[in-house]
Image: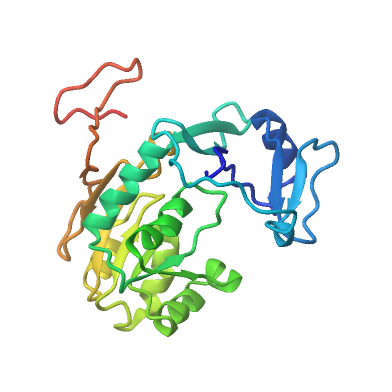
Length: 263
């Protein structure tokens, strides 16, 4: 961003064919990577090893101005409806608005620790990354084990006194079963899948505060959010985040009346 570039997160664990397609389709000119990571054959982008950043001379002076709010902050590739990954451009304005909204809704302060749990190749990781940084808080990076084992995740949350955790219902189900009161006082964010009412009640009654969130990548991470009470019978997706509106439409894109099911 300091040099006016866009970041494109790519997971080296993804299949080589997907990586090659994403790098070619995006027109990526440079790849910033760690030692030992091999790029697919035929990739034309310049490889910039992380350990060499800053060693080839001074970085350019970028203190004069920040990026244009309407310029692209990051490019994220989703699965796509055609079978090929689909690239979505997200602006600095959109990202900044989402981070600011959740900083206020979750009441994040410089005393808070936020868990970076999601792989950076998924857009929701951007909220985990930037939320504590813009608030002066602490970012706790989850171990590889914690990313796949809910019990290990709970252990790290407790060990590092993490106050804010974002995860899918699938992950929260395992964590909730083993929580035994250890989620008390923490702020829990749940999204990425429908939240079953039974799990919502368990999490909401855990002593922590529960926020259910929803949104497609194209609208910048999350579009709606709302607190979940402990006696919930039907979980809703909440209300539009600050500075945005939500419209329910039919398959032809026409706005529907209140109470009618749509997208």
